[in-house]
Amino acid sequence: MSSLVVVGSVAIDSIKTPFGERERSLGGSATHFSASASFYTDVAVVAVIGDDFTAEDEAVFHERKVNIANLKRVAGGQTFRWVGEYGFDLNTAVTKDTQLNVFADFKPELSQDARNAPFLFLGNIQPTLQREVREQSNAKFVAMDTMNLWIDIARDELIKTINVVDAIIINDAEARQLAQEANLVTAAKKILSFGPKIAIIKRGEYGASFFTKDVFFAIPAYPLESVFDPTGAGDSFAGGFMGSLASADKLDEHALRRAIVYGSVMASYNVEEFSCDRLRRLTPDEIKTRVQEFKDFTHFEI
Amino acid sequence: MSSLVVVGSVAIDSIKTPFGERERSLGGSATHFSASASFYTDVAVVAVIGDDFTAEDEAVFHERKVNIANLKRVAGGQTFRWVGEYGFDLNTAVTKDTQLNVFADFKPELSQDARNAPFLFLGNIQPTLQREVREQSNAKFVAMDTMNLWIDIARDELIKTINVVDAIIINDAEARQLAQEANLVTAAKKILSFGPKIAIIKRGEYGASFFTKDVFFAIPAYPLESVFDPTGAGDSFAGGFMGSLASADKLDEHALRRAIVYGSVMASYNVEEFSCDRLRRLTPDEIKTRVQEFKDFTHFEI
Image (tube, rainbow over all chains, first blue to last red; front, top):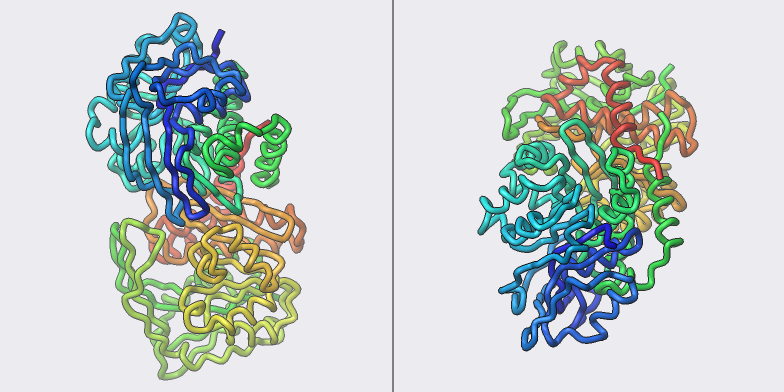
């Protein structure tokens, strides 16, 4: 029985960073999310792939014991492809090409097990699709991500979807754009006014901030000397956050704060290598060590 | 007897922000620093002013009980003037005009009291002058600031000065520029290799990071919904940091971490109004409240 479900993309990426490039790199929001969340809980992926998705591509799900009963393979179809590049400002990806392929006609249909999972994450896909998944689910806690594209071309639909989730997890540029507010605190308040109880703003190398109507919490990023490939940082953050919550099966403030730390730890590991390579060989002890480091480098007595 | 000395500018600014403008605004690094530090300890200012510096301008030092025995008035001279403007990105000031005036021939000469103060801050002035002050002082802990101008035109002199201080407190763009490194962690390490034991990187709305050879500490910024005038944020940060250390008269890690929190609190208040207006009516209780808020919004249990 799955305790956490993610709907999102499973993709084949081509990525170029200042430190290297990879022609065929397993990617997609659901991939990074589930690889990350799998360290904490039983996670199921709702997504679509084509015939070109090989057994080698699929291996990460088996290694990480991710449930792929809802990973639909379209005969004769091609997997979603993304070509992206990062400059020395690793905070922003430049999209060189996107081919939706089998994703263009994706109609997610959740199995009974997936419907009954208590935690649901709506990865970055078209907001109407996110809402359809949310409507199929009986989850008690639903979080979502989105991106600038949907704010640009489907803002009204997006706001309808935001209205039916418990938490939104987005990056700071998107938060400002979505709220049409330059100040991040004001932007977060406006986003909360769209309906969710929680807004989490991912700030890349600057860390993450958490807002509810009454509570603010913030954490700096892990001080990485080399960020190799930022692709999937946000999704592995969300995976650590939701996985940790699902594992604790609690939604109190203590659990939420801790979940943000776990999310930050997973993102910090994810960016150390291409694709999910680092998460595939990550150990629970490494997670524990870095969580303790987060505690140490943020701690002070007054 | 002063426990803390600051050398830097006392200036008359003209400031324009998206929220208002002020033609004649009391400013300068030594002004903001001493107003801030005065909440914690006895602080003396080493600086120079002209005839145009009025009793009203001077009032802030008397109100805050700042020692101005080393504030030299040049007969017939004009006070240092800075004209600056901020856009909606309040992290960066655009300098419209700078008139050095009496500052052009400033030769700081410390009184015996100032020489014997155990804590010294070298505000942002020409690095050779900073070094001359450092050589006159018997301080046991010396920190400094600098700016892009000196990195551009006096890098070698600047590095010589950095070599004779205990701590450098600079903003992130300056840290990257000084170290010629894009990654902040790498930049901080390189700056430490220039000599100081401590590098503190101010990151504006993103908070502050603290580096020694062995220790990393970071704190997010106070979540302000409106930043009115960022002028002097860095100097009031440094004032809170050095004032808190001088008051504790300790340099252990606990004292250093706490000093960064006090610095962050002072900067957060300073930017709420023009000039030192907010610090002039700040109360110890308000400081205490915000220090507690910092503790609350960074705290988590693992």
